[in-house]
Length: 212
Image 1: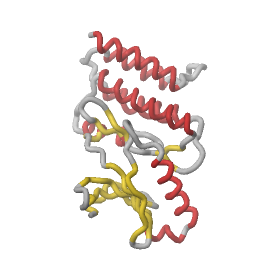
Image 2: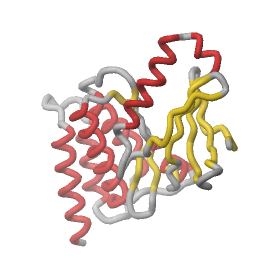
Image 3: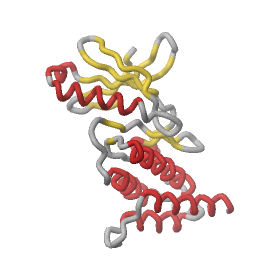
Image 4: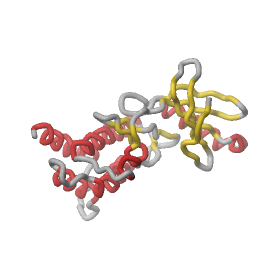
């Protein structure tokens, strides 16, 4: 049962929904019926669904079902129950170094997995991060096509750019967090930090935070 529109693009509509038989809240991404006339759009939707099926898990939303109904394709996915990070920040909240460190570690683990499997992804932003209280889960952004070798750096830099002004500067290790974020965004550095380099920095920061 579809209940509300969560997001729309030129090709798809994303609905909040409930699976009656399991009383389970889900997200349903639907290919607009008028796009069924385009073999390219249909192929992209189906190949993206297959890519997402292989990437769900502990940190990323799981695909539940791909089905054809009412003259178009629908992709049912787990509806993550956490609070959207961008909404929390828009409400005036600020994040501690510990919170953002956990987010960046989750994001980088996911990026590295995408790199290893060669899975293309849509760009990440904070609207794709769900705060679970003790950690984060992310929307499933896998999509059809070859993976751009710069995708991980793009997503890590996007996250750093959004996070930097939102750090609670009164929280422990805030300055350490800001230094790492600025280094990620520093385009004057002739050696670009790799995802593994950045991951190591956040692991070190997390250890310092845990010792405090």
